[in-house]
Image (cartoon, rainbow, N blue to C red; front, side, top):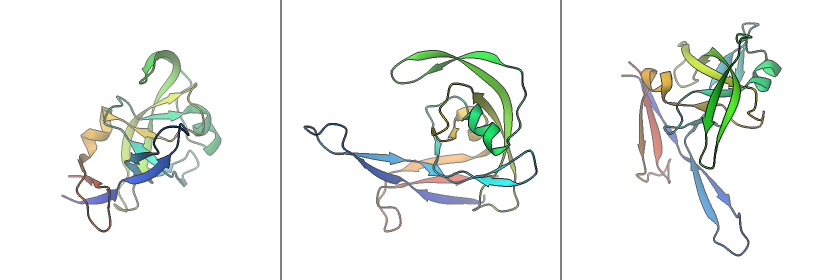
Length: 155
């Protein structure tokens, strides 16, 4: 089963000067996404989120880089840790290649959100991503992954 490891990416945060400094770990990958013109665009720091239902991308960002999706819209209630918000979305797909698995293009269902800010990273959720990849998270320390890693495997 071909696969690769991705170290968790740590980020220090100081949300409250009177409180402790926080360490935030991210399970992030850098995929290449196929555009309408047939070129691949690199997306940095895309999050693999086992708590998200859908792969989600900003519709505005998709338009900006030339990723095609259907014009039809529907409403979807998007739940976050703090609230649930009805959002206008387009149901489509992404064609993704990972540099660690060259010459393989993966088709992922994607919800293109009209309310997601363009600075929000592409989010890989349970629906379809976990059908294509076996994902294992581990916190075991190693020299190349001091905070642990994510292992992605395919058939």
